Image (tube, rainbow, N blue to C red; front, side, top):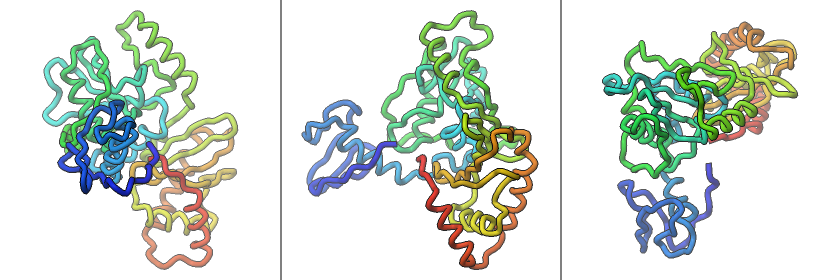
Length: 333
């Protein structure tokens, strides 16, 4: 996400009906990101009023996946997991000629989406967005993919400010339409079994992506908890749905009591903040695999539930523990 630049004193952009960034004495139309800004600054739109407009929208949508089944896993696939897919269920069912819609962490050449030869759709999640509302951007890409000619990728484009969001397009009520990520060891899912040969560009992109992928496993017993392997040590990264302040208090209680680890040799080292949710992170010994995490993670979940239910003020030790956890937070988005 781009860093916010200070605003000038003469122009105070805001979003108005999604079409213009308006100031006290100037009205700036929305144009392409690389086009000169209509305000006459000489800078490209994305580095001038476009930046301010995008930030104005971003500040309004802190949890773009809120209301979707599996919100925590959406966040994990967007920010933490290299290679994964999940079947998406549309309201009203699939259109004619579209046998399936699949969410993918990333697609070849960073395509936003792909309509395969058989009519199926792949929607890429880990792409840059233009509007500041990730849900709206993905919904726009999905709609264009559903109507694209089979055998073609969907290009990136600026998204209308008043368009549908994923919450409008995906089935959020049917209990059979659960969001169930499948983590892959590589990106071979890019190439369907029926394809004998992929293009040289796709093959090269596949090779690069596989070389960079960090081995990752989703724990089977805990929602949105992901073990990953790195050269120095392994990690457990766990996206949690609880309000941040309440979760920090609970983690501080456990940390002060010496019960915040998930087994011998493990340590709660901090957390990420991503799309409005917290992601606590544990360092693990290099010999501790995903299977060895299952039981201690389940036991920690029970301790956390008990700590979340406590509403007494924090003790001095717990406040110090909370301060340490807060200082070790990193915001991803």
